[in-house]
Image (cartoon, rainbow, N blue to C red; front, top):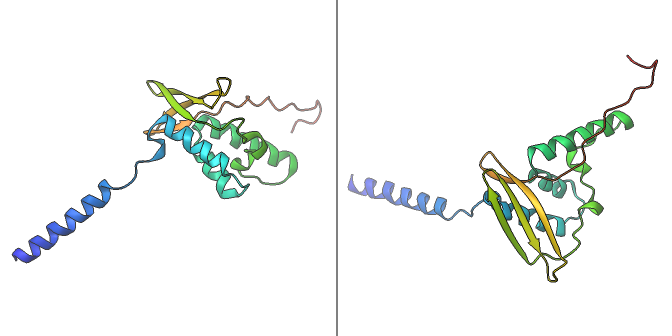
Length: 154
């Protein structure tokens, strides 16, 4: 009986050690979320998987905007498009190589400063805490209302 108890304790200890060794989620901090997005942008090769990974780092507000854009594109073209396909690689290019990421947090909002090598290489990225994880709050222009031609209403 003692041998069984020792085996159970050993197994429990090993499981606890494995859980404790799990790496922290990159978006447990706002600067971690921005750093991961920058990393994905630098390694972006245009695959659907890369774009989806970038999309998942975005805030719900940004995702909703991209979903609306994809729906509008689909309605106009007759082609279905995934919301993450709206992230255009040429618009997601970095203008400098980041050297330092620092976050200023106020409640569930944060502003991450990205600093490059020279003083003019600086950017600020807003983030928001959603469901316990930080997401990049990509600022996208609101979509204009869809205009209908007179006499074509359904």
